[in-house]
Each structure stands twice: as C-alpha cells, then as structure tokens.
Length: 271
Ligand SMILES: NC(=O)C1=CN([C@@H]2O[C@H](COP(=O)(O)OP(=O)(O)OC[C@H]3O[C@@H](n4cnc5c(N)ncnc54)[C@H](O)[C@@H]3O)[C@@H](O)[C@H]2O)C=CC1
Ligand SMILES: O=C(O)C1=N[C@H](C(=O)O)C[C@H](O)C1
Image 1 (spheres, helix red, strand yellow):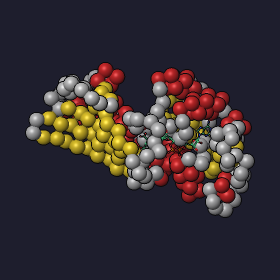
Image 2: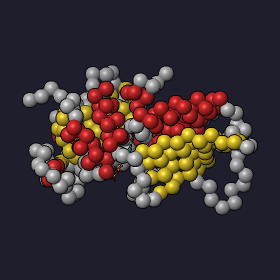
Image 3: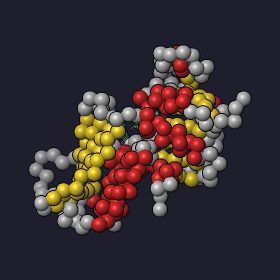
C-alpha cells in the first residue's frame, strides 16, 4: 500500500488520456488507480497497459465512474462536456479533486460544475500549460495599456480532430483581453466572419479558428492599429505539457478547501 494519491484518468484511450497515463507512470508523487472509458468502448474490461500496446499495468479499463472514483483521490478529465458534468457530480460525491481540461463547455455545463465545486475541489482550465497561463496575464496587461484604436484578434490553430471552436485557450485569452480593456467578452466578441460582414466594429475582440494536420495547439493575440502591430504567440509542440500541468493541479488540490480553481491558482499567478 502507498500513501501517494490515487488518480483516475477518464477518456483514457484519447490523445490526452494516454498522455496522462504516460506522465503518471513517470510520477513519484501520484499513482494511477483507475482508468475510465465510455460504455461500449473496445478498451473496457481490458488491461490498460495492454490496450495501449505495452506491458500490463494491472489496471482494468472500466466504464463505471462511481466505482473507480470511490477508490481515488483525484480525477483527471479530458473528455467531452456531457461526460465532464456527470463526472463533476460523481467526483464531488467521492470527494475527489476533479481536474477538468475538457473544452467546449457551455453556460449550462459551467453552472453544474460550479454547483459541484461546493462539495469538492475542482481545477478547471482550457489550457494547463505554464506558457499559456502566463500569456493570459501578459495579454491582460497589454490590453489595459492600449485603447480601442488597437483592434484585438485571436487566432488559433489545432489538429484536424478537434471538435470545438474557438479553442478553450482562445477563450481564456479573449477573457484576459476583455478584462484588461474593462469590457465583457460576451458583448465584445466577434466570431466566425463570413460574407458581407461590414467593417470591423471598434472595440470588438475577434476570433479565428484554423484546423489542420497534427498541430498540437498554436495561439496568437494580435493587437493591430494604424502603422503597427503587436503579436503575442504561444506554440505547444507536445501534449505532455498539458498532462504535466494536470498532474500538478491534482497534487495542488489535495487537502484544499472545496471550490472552483484554475491553473493561475495552481501556478501562483493569480492576483
Ligand atoms: N485544458 C487543456 O490543457 C487541454 C484540453 N484539451 C481538451 O481535452 C478534451 C479531449 O481532447 P483529446 O484527448 O484530444 O480528445 P480525444 O477525442 O482524443 O479523447 C476524448 C476521450 O474521451 C472519451 N469519452 C467521451 N465520453 C466519455 C464518457 N462518458 N466516459 C468516459 N470517456 C469518455 C472518448 O471515448 C475519448 O477516448 C477536449 O475538450 C480538448 O479540447 C486537450 C488538450 C489540452
Ligand atoms: O483539443 C486540443 O487538442 C486542445 N485543446 C485545448 C483548447 O481547446 O485550447 C488546449 C490545447 O490548445 C489543445
């Protein structure tokens, strides 16, 4: 028996799920205690290591969240919005730290997550990397220093399997720019221009999403005015950095008071 916190990885066959398992294998502070996939998935009932094409890990892939969460202290969740809100309820019941990386969450999903956070620790971020979280701080600062003569555009590119747009990261950067400017993103956001759109509205924060190939994640915040542009850019070239951020959040959340936190809290970048 070990006193390292036990961790469940949900969506374990996914791009992030498998990366989380690899990073847990390297950790000497957390141990993999369970693996979850959706009911009907081919991996359910199989040894996780073998399903991943390697040596047995002694962990059987389950489709029963209640049972796996009951034997864990943390849940690492990079799945899909409907799954994530169900896991938020169940992880809170089991008093597990729920680390949510899932993006594409709509207001109703966010309300349910907020309710679950009354009972347990939830760390949620559209991007778990240090670089992007720092970039949100820089974006807020630059936006605060410039007036609306500077147009703000956020451009992101991801792999061709991504199902949500704009990315969670782009929205985090948009929120940061809006906060710096002292406006509400919901009022200022301009998404998906097409056709005869008319001229750009002063003060808008524009979003553009590109999809192609195997791009892990690239984000640019562009501040453009007459005669000059400032471009802030982050490039993620390895999903391991998101996984390492999630493990750090799971550890940070142990023994913390219930509530909803983000990676700025975990990284000590919140003011
Ligand atoms: N916050 C961050 O740092 C990052 C967030 N993401 C987000 O994580 C999510 C997943 O991304 P990927 O791994 O690329 O997707 P993916 O499609 O490769 O994996 C998702 C997995 O979730 C599983 N799943 C869906 N419903 C489930 C359920 N009810 N129970 C158990 N498993 C279920 C699917 O079967 C699949 O294996 C996306 O929302 C993505 O935007 C991705 C990378 C970094
Ligand atoms: O789906 C992805 O791959 C990613 N999703 C997150 C997002 O929506 O921003 C984080 C990262 O960019 C990769």
